[in-house]
Length: 148
Length: 160
Image 1 (cartoon, each protein chain N blue to C red):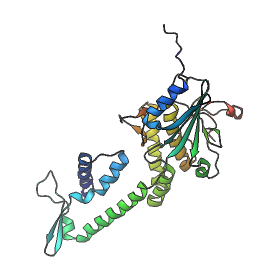
Image 2 (cartoon, rainbow over the protein chains, first blue to last red; image 1 turned 180 degrees about the vertical axis):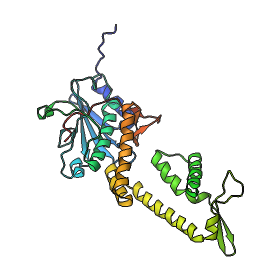
Image 3 (tube, one colour; image 1 turned 120 degrees about the vertical axis):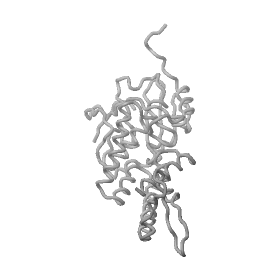
Image 4 (cartoon, helix red, strand yellow; image 1 turned 60 degrees about the horizontal axis):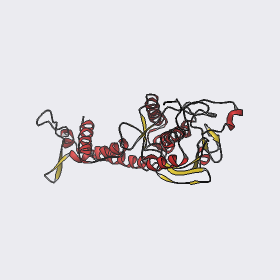
């Protein structure tokens, strides 16, 4: 019977999907209730290669971090927009408390493409100093929201 | 007329004979191969150039080059410079670096216009749900094998 609720994907299922999708091909580990996945992302044919790390705890929300290159060095001291955390940079990819990301959704089909999109707008922001990717801008108190 | 003819012939040759990972690679190769369809015939110790008009038999677009070879030299010098500029662009990694190189080559306004145009295209495709991510390429449009659609999302957090 359809109950309207879809089963969350397990860490192992997310792991297999990340490994199987060519856009997130990399390596990772399942350990102590946590999934860590590392891969190289490029936002466009003109873009750099970025070392991305996904951290995901069962029942939690995925965290997407950029391990390299140093985004702050590229930003030359400017405060980078749409980050939950400046160091190491943790990307704000979707609106929390909405349905843009839910636990039944595959990471390789959500946060991985969104990461490429974020990086594209980041590189553009480096040039123009304007964030052209749109988004919601919470009060400063909401900055610690636990989300991707 | 000469430039458009050479570009269109080069494009036809490139898409028929080669495969490219993205549109940019194709563009660079089209420019590189532009002179390939110019016929060069040795005449009296010099050369003559022929770029035949495919729709009017016997019309040679390069006729003026044969009367004033300096025009041919100017074309080849322009093409060499253009290829060298493209090589600089090709070596660039990062849209921001591309912006800097474009500014150096063409000036600030054309460079900004080029980056804006690219950004607007990505944003438009994103709005209509046509944007995809392809392996080793990143954001792209169209049915690229092994690519994944970019679902709708809203970036969160401070925009400053």
